[in-house]
Length: 544
Image (tube, rainbow, N blue to C red; front, side, top):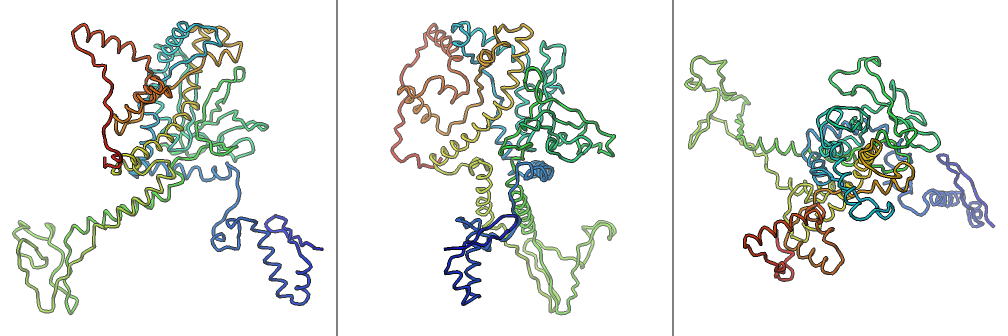
C-alpha cells in the first residue's frame, strides 16, 4: 500500500509516491523522513535526464523557459540585425563567411534549363526541345535586363547574389513582384527588393495573434496574407521624426484568384510557426565580437612593442629628461636647437646620466606566440556553427589532399542545400511568374496551362544550374569521373554539370565542330584514354 503527495511547482503538478517504509521512517524519525521525501521530490522533478535536474549547480544559473518561434526571435530581431550589419562592415571573419556563401552558392548566378514533362504533355522529343529553347529565350528576354529590376540597376543573375547576401545578413528579405509596363521589354513582371527593417507593423502598433513584425497571417492556417511595408527605412539618413513622416503599404502575399505568389518573404525557416528569419551570424555574434577585440588588442600590443620606450629612474623621482621639444616651443630650426630636456638615441651613441639615474626599457613580449593557436581554436567553433570547414572559413589549405578534399565535400553539402533553398524559394517562383505571363500574352503556346494543374506543372518543369565546385586535383577527379561513367553508375550529363556546371548536350555541337575543323586541317585527334595516375598508395597524405 502506498500513498502520494501532490505539490505544484512552477505551475506543474508533481506527484510524489510514499511507501509504507516512508511512513514508518517519518513516524519514528521525522528528520530522516523529510530527507527521504526531498530525495523523492528531486527525482520527480528531474525525471531521467541530468540536464533537467534543477538541483544540479550547472542547471541553476541563467533563465530558461520554453518559447514558441516568434517569442524567441521577434524581441531580439532588431538587435540581431544591427549586430550582424555592424560585423559585416568591421569584422574580417564575418565578412569572409558571408562572401564565401555568396560566391559558392550563387557565384555568377543560377541559370535555368527548362525540363518539361513531355510524356504528360504528349510531345515528341524534338517538340519538347523546341519549346524548352523558346521558353529559355523568353525568360532571358524578361530577366537579363536592368528593366527587370524596379530600380533599373541589376539583372536577375546579379539580383540573386544581393538577395542571398541580405538574407544571410538580416535574416530575411521581402521580394515584391509588381506588374509594370516599361519600354524595351514585353513583360510587365518586375522585382522590387525590400529590406527587412522596412517590414514592420503599421504605425508601430503592437503584435497580435495575426499580425507579427509586419506579417499579417490567416487566423486559421497561419499562412501569410499581407506584408506591411514602411515607405522609409528606420535607419535612413532622414530619420522618422514622427509617424506622419512615413506611410505604410500593404502587399498581398498571394493572388486572390490564381493563388500565385505576389510577394516573397525569403528566409530559412527553422521552426514551425516562424514568422521572420534570423541572421546567419546570430549564433556567433558574441564570439566574433570578442575575437575582434582580442585581435585589436594584440595588434596594438605588437605596434607598441615596435617602439623603443625607456624610463629614467632616479632616487628623488625627478629627472632632467622630459618630453622631446616641438617646433611650437622652440625658435629657429628645431633640429639645430640645443636642448637637454629630451634624450636622443642613435647608432653606437653613449648617453650620460646624472648620479643615481638609470635607464630601464619596457618589453611588452610581443608578438604573442599563443595568439595564432588560440585564434584557430575559436575559429573552428565558429566554423561548426556556420557549417563552414575551418580551412574554407580562413581560406588556408595546409593539410593533406584527403583532408582538403574532405573539407570541400563537407562544405559543398551545405552549399548545395543553400542553393536548393534559393532555387525553390526565389528562382523557381520568378521563372513561373515570367512563363505564366508569356503563356497568357500568347508569346508561348502551352495548351491546357490554365485549365489543368497537372499540365501546368508539366510545362513549368526546370533544372537550375550553378557554378561548379572547384577541383583540388583535376587529374584524379577526371579519372574518377571516367570510371563512374564506364561503370554506368553516372552519366556524361551528370559529370559535365559537376565539372563545368553546363549540360553535356550543350557542348556536343561545339565539340563536333572543333573536331571537324581539326581533321580538315590535318591535325590528328588523340583518342587515347587519360593516363591513369601512377601515384603510389598513401600519396593522398602528401602535402598540397
